[in-house]
Length: 121
Image 1: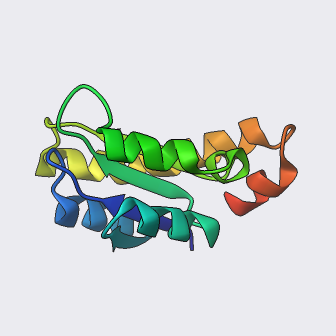
Image 2: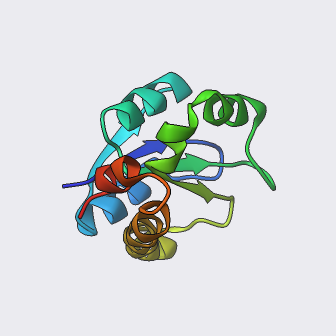
């Protein structure tokens, strides 16, 4: 089972996101900080969901993602959820995350077979 990590932000209802990801077959967990997110990715999380209060990442989230080595970034999908996220969107979040993981696995395989393997088979 692939793990999905949710880092709540102003535009994200964490409970709805966790439920949607679990319904799509992910082991969905909440993270308390960007450091927690990185720890989950290091042990194999395939999806990272970040809440955003505006048109992009806040400075702390951007810094946390930028500090992750490229091999870690290649082995996960990052989903940015804005302020328009509602409960009705939650079902699509799980479906889209699953499709994104499958697509990234195919795209990354020629470049980094190890990272593709971490995305599942």
